[in-house]
Image 1 (cartoon, rainbow, N blue to C red):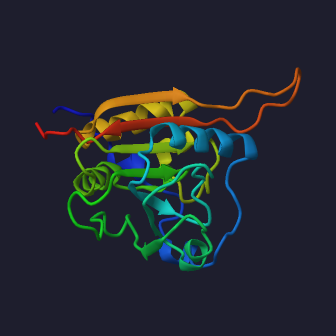
Image 2 (cartoon, rainbow, N blue to C red):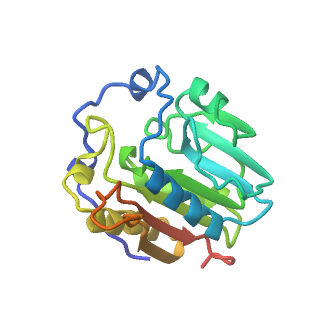
Length: 216
């Protein structure tokens, strides 16, 4: 499958120091507002299989899965143990730096779905990471990404900061295509103001694709 080849400068960052230093101290705060959290939770509830083993990629203090959702197990992969230890939706977790090593420490085909919440902008080699997410998913499993316009600007890749929300969705769609995901969708899931003239909250985009049941 042909896919876009991105220039290396797209994935440079203002702060190229070791990510382990940046994420060493826990940040037990949410990174999007309540409306965007609800929108992300709603999307996950629509797409995630009940009773499945879910990979929470680039996990942190909260996974934002809906409270009504009943997974079989949620495994987190992230950079800060204190944050993930306090995440009530994780059954277990591993510390792993995807920018240092995009190979996930999991066997082939072990997960029923994967999610990545407001963190895709920090990947410096996203297609390689996405290919390994593909490897650890079962056939037919979704990989669901949600993101807003918030980030740690010094650690986000260069292309992210200059992109509109639609362009961000196109970029993530390209990553999924480059990793051979199929049936790819991109939707604006931004919450609408609940009353006339209310200030708009954080925008939210959802992009997802599926590992084909039969690899082609």
